[in-house]
Length: 352
Ligand code: GLY
Image 1 (cartoon, rainbow, N blue to C red):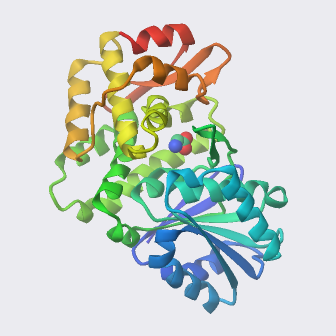
Image 2: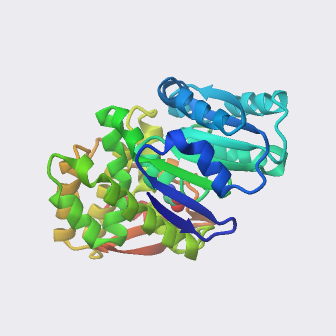
């Protein structure tokens, strides 16, 4: 098992390995000081059926009283009525400042649980146990949380670190292929923005992707850890982790969440890179390499959409500061930069 320490406002460890879920009770005793008796597991309906029992048993073995709350397994669960139901549940269970929330699930569960943990009693501790590739390499790390609002992605949220992350690679075995592959949208993002070495590893992968998965996941986690340690609250370099996301989030809204986050990010990365090739920032060679890698993981490189509609959604993006937007573009594989441009210039950029 790999133990990766993240130094941030609230420092924490990320445990990465196989078959970790059933040892969760032990890991909590080892890693969390002065934990209360109660643990609330927030999960989704699907994950609850497969892994809820194993987790509950492990916690009970170590003397915890366990409460379980499952949200529907879909993006639209990230809303205010779901939040209210969870707050009510926590009050009913008598959860206090000493107690702990465990988020057992993918990005939706991590985002909503982090927000609940940050706001309930002005903040209680929470642990992420990500069950998708996407949440193992990205959503569970770095404390970003939130809910969608007015159909805009993550419009309301905070940055609030977990106290522990347990990344059990074994849990990925039960994912549907489409959900699993969606995670490669984020993996490719890390590679193209920060690591030529990871990019090359991804290019060289053969059919048996599982044999290299742990190494790939650990590389992504370490990239994110290094970014967070420099810029937890996204004043500068953390913006690079949003490569492809400004367009990607707008696409998720445009297609009413019928495309996955990973698919949307891939199309977003390609769209923005196509424009940055035209603007003379990126070489055509790097763009073609990016597109080929995305195709290799059966993810889309383009979709038909109305650019003006996407631009309107972008106006609600968190990367807008007054009348400028901050976006990440790739200069060459493994090397990215942040551009700050007036919004109207960005509109022209999108239409190049
Ligand atoms: N998912 C991007 C970030 O955590 O900053």
